[in-house]
Amino acid sequence: MRADRLLSLMLLLQQAKSRQLTAEELARRLQVSARTIYRDLDALSSAGVPVYANRGPNGGIALLEGWQTSLTGLTQAEVHALSAVAAPGALADIGLSAALESGLIKLSAALPVVQRSAAEHARQRLHVDSSGWFQGREVVPHLDVLREGVWQDRKVWLAYRDFDGEASERVVEPYGLVIKAERWYLVAGAERGPSVFRGARVEGARLLEEGFERPAGFDLATCWKEWCQRFGERRSSYVATLRVTEAGEEALRGIRPRGEHERWGQGRRGRDGARTVTVDFERESIAASQIIGLGRGAEVIEPAALRARLEAIARDLGAVYGAPAAASAGVAAAPAPGVAAGPTPRRGRGGRREVPPGTMARRGRG
Image 1 (spheres, helix red, strand yellow):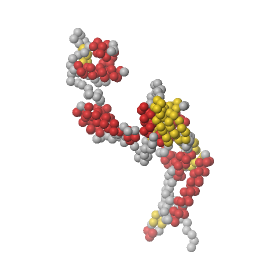
Image 2 (cartoon, helix red, strand yellow):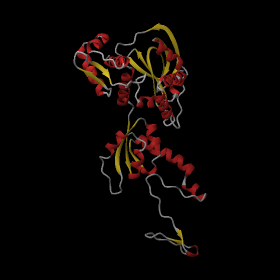
Image 3 (cartoon, one colour):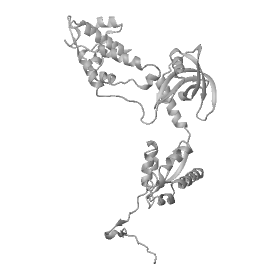
Image 4 (cartoon, one colour):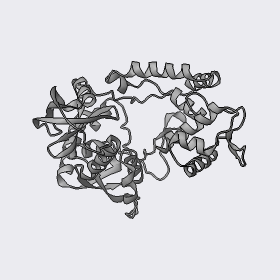
């Protein structure tokens, strides 16, 4: 590879110190042509390596006197980035956190003194925490078996339960493990081609003696990216039409993906400031839970089943938090999202109530 050749060329020039090497000599040692050497020299120069060439019988190629790369060839930014790497819980799950820590210690010891202090400087100023706030990592009881299958290229028997609760058994070829948002996934070859299995749904796993050959040209990162794209396109869909106020729409934007926001802006607002929007929820249960949080800021127009579900929930909530109960406790009900609070009567002199402007106080006859 050219990157390896460029590094070898730079190290050869560094070992020569002030002695100049000819292009022919470098070409012979790297087993390329002299023309390739000159192209590589241009690449090194463009990358900031102070290399120069002298023409003539006694000429040759050398580095600027006194310049040398570090033993590892790391730049200052690379040292900072590697020093900021914490041992994430993901590596602890598969037993590699200690290996990462010891590897970083060895890397630090191999750095020159100047870069070693820079590494400690960066470690004290940047810490990476990949864990979530309120959602812990899922328990994957058979992760060790999956890891061994991936590492040893051996088939694995799985007992799996999918999202709908359907149980199945199968033999797969484990290609790799992926962790996304605190969740482990197994990418494996199955009867229908490369498939993805959620680690927490693996109810049983057994490492088999039979091995397998990974597909030629298979790349785990590329496979995962393509699967995620297909998953997003074929995910479950539950479309609901809502009538939302301005405040309700703003709250809705905070809980729905940004890709949906542009479509909402196409509808015109009515005189009351509300407008009709179409939201593609994943399931009815998700739609209900998210719309409830909007209070009076959103009203379901359709489907009728979702509207009926919310009406039933509202009746249940009313039985617990209804107006009579709040009034008997002397507590004023808080306005729902998207609804402005009404004017509150004030006490005037002598304890008399002052009625807000624009309203009329009705008194019963004694």
